Image (cartoon, rainbow, N blue to C red; front, side, top):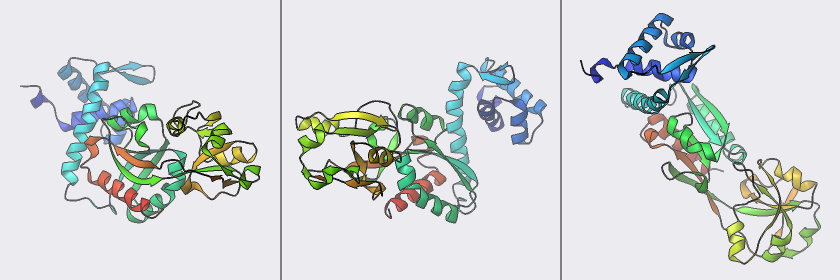
Length: 298
């Protein structure tokens, strides 16, 4: 009997679950099988692939390199099979599942309240997990299926990840509401010289998205502080002499106010990103459409 004839969907589901849970008894409980049945399926998989796949280490199981590589492909295969079974049956109102969204606190504040309101109204059985955005991990996590979509900006997405523009955003130069800078109009050279705060949600450094824009004018920004949170920025500015470029959708704010500047920075795109394996998934298509719908309202 050939290898493909010895492999079935149940075995793929078992291996997929074991790679997530790393525990035989939990997988048995999830799948409604005995632990002995799960062990037997694992034995067959080990025999088929000539590899131990998962090795016991204390109270957990550690996957081999081959198991990790198989896991990436198995998740895609199972997603495609599930897509076949639900192709003509999809209904948001009855869909049961979990979707994971990666987002900065900007996207969480600007988009998710209205989006989640629509989800609760139209897909009450759908569960949503929102995680912090990490640019170094977003590609691999979307590929592995640990993430379903990411809400972010184009520079943070690798070329092999699909994306679509949701809307464009404008940064506004802001300072503490008590700043004396509000009594004057500032040239770009004035702005460059002022102490600046940058919000860098994915990389801890003293670089900002508008550095190139300043450089094109022959200017270098005086960046003196970097923080990961958009939400914390107004509080920081309120107690210091710093200024910052801040997304317009998070304004107004009682502690800060826009400065009068002679020229505005270029707008930037906010995107939704996903892996190609979920491109035709009905629930993922619905999710992306809801996000676009919400973006037309904010």
